[in-house]
Amino acid sequence: MTGTTTKPTLTNLDRCDRCGAQAYVRVVLPGGGDLLFCRHHAKSYDSKLRSVAVEYHDETEKLSVS
Image 1 (cartoon, one colour):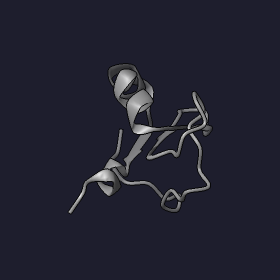
Image 2: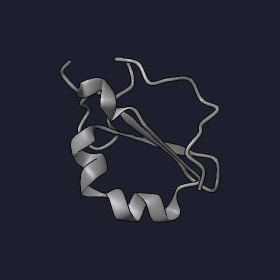
Image 3: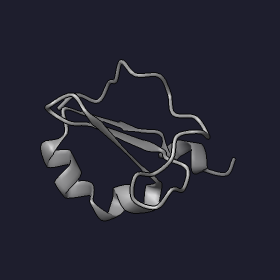
Image 4: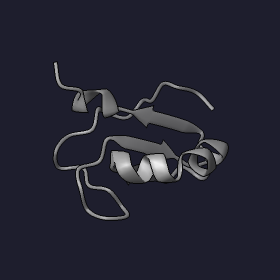
């Protein structure tokens, strides 16, 4: 698994595949497909997602209040 992705950054148009909220995590699967998750669902499935991911792109830092 690598921490870098070749896909563009996530935008407000990218939606969680589980609930439809704004996605902040993209998981690229070995077959080339990808899944998008909000922070809540990415956190809920974190260990399973990381174990199967070819790439795990996390932009949850965008949620931090400065």
